[in-house]
Image (cartoon, rainbow, N blue to C red; front, side, top):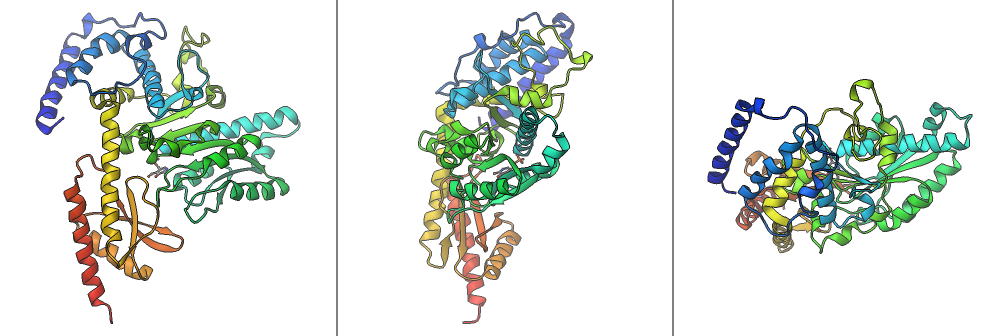
Length: 442
Ligand code: PLP
């Protein structure tokens, strides 16, 4: 959709809303649809090819309006999370289907998803231990709990530990910045010997500093054998798994209890939309369920209705699945795959430019849209280069530390980025680097 069409569609949408408000008294106040009404009205999978905006909007009256207010909001979310799960080829266990034990929910952010997973895991382990040892108090068990993540994990993971009131330990990564099975195994052995209770491991697929991937095919079986909840945080990289060539990076997800990524980061869905799946919805509901009288409804115990309020911290919810529905249909799976591939190609183009310049090093494997690079030389030199790049205000780079080195990060992430932007960015960086190096004493 170009800017002209966006203006036109936006105005049409305002008319639709105004008509709705003007004629609201002609509409039914309370829906008369049966639970599950929506699933049969739309396809089981996202379309391969793009559809027109008219086709999507036409379906609002047919699919959404009969379930005005809550049922449509809930049911479209369940089906969209299944569509997206199928696009990623998630194991069947994570899909809701009509009778599944798992399913997806839209959270606001990856930070929330990690916290929810950690709290659910905490509640599960406390119940498990108390079942065997009824004399042990909840406080006593919680004081012994220990959760783990990569030493490259996002700060939100450490924060989940802080908010959840449990110890959080960082597992050292290998030379590819990836957590391996042996490293986790070693720490688990030590902690069990010290009387601690390991209960949660947050694996990262696509770490923030360098887009590294924890080895979940090794870590998953260890977590399963040790009854440790494995959550996967793929906040950025997850979108790429809709492409068959990147899907192997998700191998091992079958061992996870929960998995999350942010379509709002790299799948063209506007903020906020963080997609989280659990294998056993009972684990998450068991941790957060509250049933006051004012929230009771007829289908409470029928099992036909998903009550997302039990899957999250807030009670109220936005209709975020509408954004997914529009984007998936208007791009089609092929359009979304093309979008991801284009960004990865542009990142590789930038990588080649860096590699062709003897003054620079590439600091980590370039797998998706992030390129970590630095000038050969001291951290101070690279810090100065970054300062000059950012204060020139033409492009913006955010740095990271990798193995003690100050590293610059070039991320391709805007919808409109083209090769010429990458070329211009590189010539700008290269020019500033030349200026800086000339100033150094020879
Ligand atoms: N996890 C990873 C790997 C990230 O890269 C980020 C943010 O960049 C986050 C979590 C936090 O994401 P959110 O803002 O959705 O909480």
